[in-house]
Image (cartoon, rainbow over all chains, first blue to last red; front, side):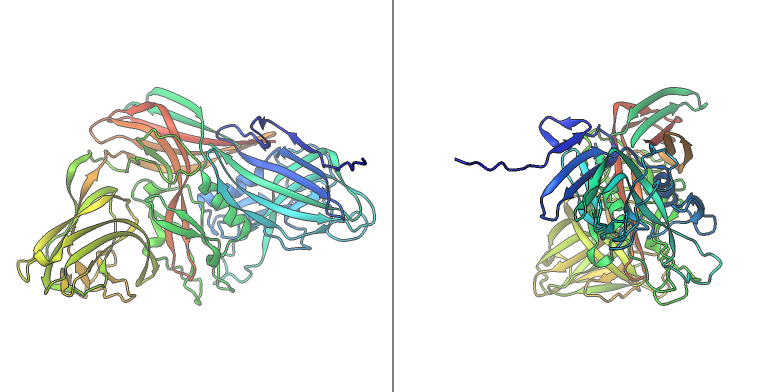
Length: 232
Length: 396
């Protein structure tokens, strides 16, 4: 009798996994961090690659923005934070800080991917070499950022930030770096009213390097999930 | 990110008596909720349901006023705070449609400093991600514990009028607590007309919506009394309502106490009627049908207990250090015991100031983003100082 082998994508885990739930990476009590998960899906919808790793780290801009919110830094004496253009920007407390809800075709913030493979440093302010949005050579089409609602269980609470990257460039693209970029709001204390609420700057908060790279064949889609986790 | 928790106890001469360091257990689900609403820019219509630190239900969001008048000055993660009774301005939304040159926060866009930042408590209940408050919070101040229950907050004189409540209607007062209290019963000066039947009293968490409006959320406790046994006139009666369960009231937080008669008669609640209402005179009538006869100051007497107090210093967020591959900063607060006796600390945590502001009128509330159990207990003697420091650290 002929049997058809079912091709199952191999799931690779890196990090300490629970023996009771191998898909559940273990954070130590008190950890606050992120799980980076990616899936490469073919044109036929079949998953070719699925990996889950513990994100290497937040970078300093995460703390810079957190302290702006925690201190309620005013427009009068703003904080200075380096943006993804490597320029120091004045930032104050705002309901807009930490926004990463980028829409489709917007590559300036939200989850970003790139081809740089230099190891992360705490002061990284941008991806080393970002892959731009588009369907041209070396480009990926950035989908809109979506979110999984916060939830919690006996030891952990978390929510997920997700983005799809579609390869319509005609050739294989290899992703070596992934990051999360968020908004920061500028003060305008000299204005009677704030005239340009839409202008903010972009700040890198997480950067990961994937040493082996992620190959995305032409026509395939890379889905990236950052799941931010707090463990007690 | 790991967080180091350091507790240092010093005597009256500021000499170190004890130092503890432990990994914080620590950040709860509400830190995730606050990061989520910022990342996703959640709007008011789809706000996330959370419970503030006295159990009142709130919805949080990142919406700000639209248009060129908006400054988006809403904050949802304030941790730095002044000492004790110092005020923290949590939300600075300007009035809808007006120039933001005049930021005019309502009273409940302010919170007392003690409710923001590092907190102390006396319970060693195990930490869970779902913790919404310290189980037995120690309040700010110098006072000794009050127990058994006594009158803690009251307006008992000056009545020259009364507020009518007919069958099936709800009327009551809106107060902002001036100190932390656990209320076990409430006395109201009442009389009746006809047969009001069973009178139900409810205590609800409440918050400002606009200058003359409040919103109601969680029912915290209730009680009943037989209204048919009330007098029909002077000298009236201070009727005591024993609550179904004790209600924790926190300073700077709003509460609505209301009554409703079930019978065909009516109940009258004695009040002071005056048009000269000071801005901070908050025991005011509130008709839950929507109107607001603000010139009645209803008489009331809140009876309960309070724990021993410890003085909350300012909470600082500072000390950013960035040396590759690490970055860290500190959140620190000093607590001074001038209560005359020992203060036993078994838990600590962090309350963050958050806000709700769909139309330019802000209500603020604290959310618990962190809780730790301190083991073994730390006993802070009278005259001693306890320094609590959280140091979050990230490493690439």
